[in-house]
Length: 567
Image (cartoon, rainbow, N blue to C red; front, side, top):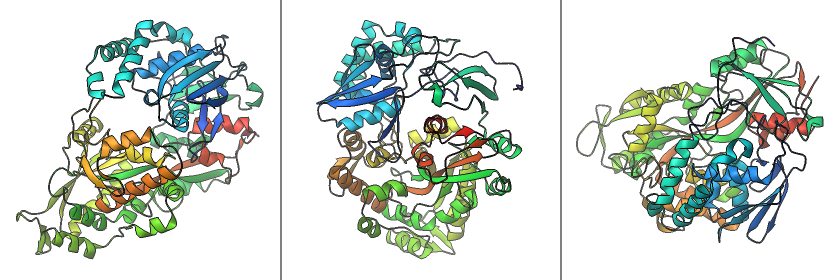
């Protein structure tokens, strides 16, 4: 393979935001313990974990007996335990679920769940959030002092998170993370089916590693992981340079038409992987009024926005059937047909929008809307300047509001400043991307704009910031008056799949639908493009396409199951 330039000097550190950690590494070079079979909450495909079992409040993970690191040393329980302690420095979700983690021999790890935490939630956070790294590289940073600090901090944080964030254990963890982030290893020691043999700013070259415990099932000898800027992805596909693309792929209608002219080209649109929302500043007039937010739900032509931005043929996004806070596939899993039918779909209807504004004290004169205080109703739509597809959608919204009589301005803002504006509540209407698509509906609500990371945030770098400004105390159907972000944080760590999860899903769905703290406008699909010129791929009906939206995982599992191979 001819490279486009010299291999760059780089280092890898999964706990640093400043190093060029290879995007092709996860799944190819480093294995997760298991992969969730979306949209199931409790079905997983084993990877580095051969199997696992539950014994009371303990989860035992048994590692693949023949798994080794690419330096020839065995993968052991110490690697997993050390990784978990280092992940704790970044507030990894698994530490909200457990009270202890310990090695059991060289090939097993035992996690002890907190009282009241369902084991399926421990499995979800472990398998979705933890990728083991070698103790030969990182174990030296897991000191007895660090372990004690982690255990002390999380013990206190479960009952008094504010005090824990000010305590000595947290300070020890913060210092440890700062030091850890400076580490700059030059050798990538993985445990997966591929080794990284070179990398430029445009390409990562991976070759099959024969020491992989399931190497006999890996038939693709080499992977060239190309640059992932969207125009380059599309160009690589159309030129035949790339055989496959997945994940955040966005193919505009013109590119879709060109791609489908190739007889070997295939395009799937797997719905429901994540969601785009329109957010309102709930803390400031006029969007602190439920009627005004409902009016906007009618006044924004969401279907037209989506079709103009993403087209109609196997598009990257479609309009949700009902804006209740969930992608359609998850909503249909946890809500009955009768419940869904009772919710408001908010079709585009300017007459209903006008009636709601009038009920809220607005008036229209000379085709323009005026607020109850007599001032013109003017809004600024704010959008991340890097989200070019969503900018196209918001241009439709901007035009529609102007036509309706609301003076509208579309303002694009650089990404860091945009995020800051959302966290500080310095916006009127913005776009929020991207959440949803977890098979756990309560997690979808918790990660939504009204969740604790984005609404009256209490901890972390955004602590004390209002964000969305919704509530925080709200009368939730079926729950009464609760602190919304705090209640969602509690539920995701206490409620597993079953009748109670469905009851709570219905409560939150009603809240979002009735009060419109934010408005779903796009259920994004995972556009998957692949060519059958050189490779065999799973049938388009194969569940693998839906179960493994991460393209790296799909390629590995597809080979293990015999559904992906060279021709």
